[in-house]
Length: 285
Image 1: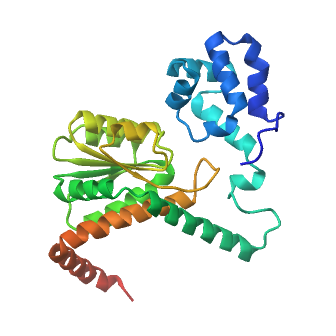
Image 2: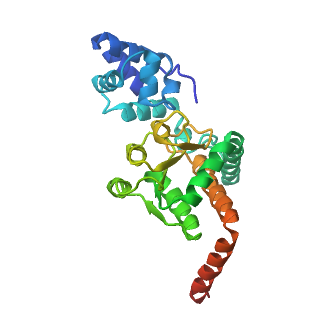
Image 3: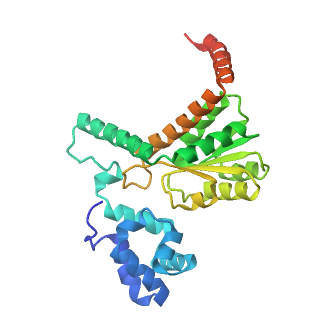
């Protein structure tokens, strides 16, 4: 990210303007944000509250009293202010980059995300996730927004193994389906930020019902991890809120889970792949 000396940025200027009228506890949050705005992009509201020694409610009041709709609005506004225009598209590119160089930078960022994710991959967590999936009575994979392709991709793979698996990307239907699950079932929540309300609520309900919970996320300290029995972390060096390279890393985690479960059920995997190909061949030219 760029230097935080850009005092003319809209979000920080708005906070400075409102600072004299804030209550003491809200002013504490304001001063913390002004002094280190680059940290807020990767922190949840609860983490900011803890850093400032105040409650979550105080952080929310601070956001609204300084003209933001809520914490997410504050976070997005500061992220936009701290990044260059091209960083909104991709971290490494510049306006004068030719197409071939743009492609190279995008590819290298994706490759780096895979290496970084592999470095932090927790082997014990991976084994636990594999065990949960292959022993599950039912599996629900849930996610919204840019996580939807990963949800659907993971479903497409696990379904091929004959597992009782569903993918749900509608926020209301996620909660409806998880309300019917319980012990012996598994819910997988996928969220890059780990702060999107829908997958967090879904995992919270799943855990309350006694189902095993797995999350795939790019933030180890995010709210979704509080309700996950197993956390699988992806890593990407991106300033954007909606990351690009991390999606590839998360899909690779899903791929690894599929391959491991398939190897543990080799006969079923081979049989089902043959059945699938036999069914699809008439549709091929």
